[in-house]
Length: 520
Image 1 (cartoon, rainbow, N blue to C red):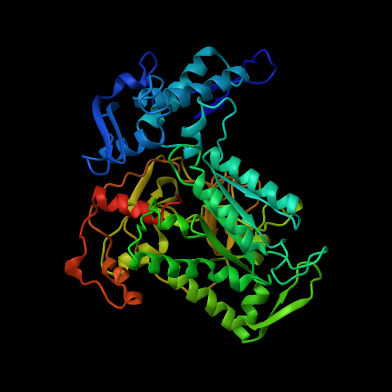
Image 2: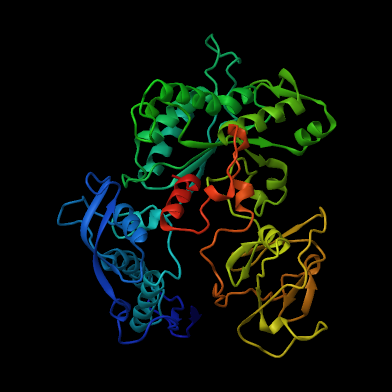
């Protein structure tokens, strides 16, 4: 969206000249679309969980978007004069503040370029070509020093001071509307001695307090619950307690439900259930996975001495992880060895945890939208026709010489989609932040050398990434094929037959799915 200009602002830096792509000079983006006044109501209309009448939204935005934006992202106390009531105010607050920072920092070559940047950003947000994460909408233009990152990774040492500092930092992060991840493996196990007598509480006990903080502090004071990730290493003395802590609490929840307590997410019964505000993950190593494969023993080691305090069957420990995850979807698994092998900045120290957000697997642009390759395989195997977008400059010629410049993308049907077994993969990261994973011999199109195997790419190569619009021309409201197979509920003693399943997406089904898979 930008290119370097030759003019020099007063701070001596080279400013940016902004080329308009989505906005029109002399016309405000707000004036180029239709608006309407609506009511945002969530829940029973007679006693709604949220209600804001007379809000102004683009006519093209759905009612579901209206409800979410009005409840989550409009700033100001509900019912007060300061309360935002229009998307114009919300987007103007964010785009105007960010543009103001650019003006103050001398980022733009001229006032016209600053105005173009603000109009471009406004148009992009208004027309939903892109969207910021929640903390940006929460805080930018509203807080004096806004917290804009979605996720933070914290660390903790085996001291009470560090543990209390962890809770303080996490509370501040939640107050700002962001999420937190932490590895608690430095904290000694519950059977390890304390210097002044007695035994330690152990990390799982301290998790209770942190869980209560997360449940109490509405994320950013902005009606969203806190997002947490807690990690424990596979050799920690309390790893079994960690594996089962959520599953056992859910057994308690079932008993309270059967006794007549309100177990809805804000019900009095649910508030007594612990460990429910975090996603838990066990951090495993290649050594452990090899021990599982070989059926060997696995030592749990003391944090203070490094000595083995308990020895388990590695396969049985893995079975415990699988069993608990089957019962309550936790814990997940993180692969410590691979994560650190692929560390992009190892000099900064090893990676011990990840944040609460996880990307989907490799996806490609199709006429039905972005689609994971494994889904593409399943859907084409089922007979569905899916066309994949490729850039025109890569099509039509063989050889490795640079090709004549072609613009745009073309959608074509894959000749074959197949599984080729398990092979090593490489991970590439590009200057614009994009990443790509593929086999080492996968051919990558470059502007300077044509097709080059991934393992042979050099820093001087210019790889063509697809940043051209790829419209989902054949997107359908029908649910994906084989949905019935995935919906079967054998774990609860039954199954779902085709006639009972919805056949098409709806706003209600989408909202329910979002609640089930969202981060809080």
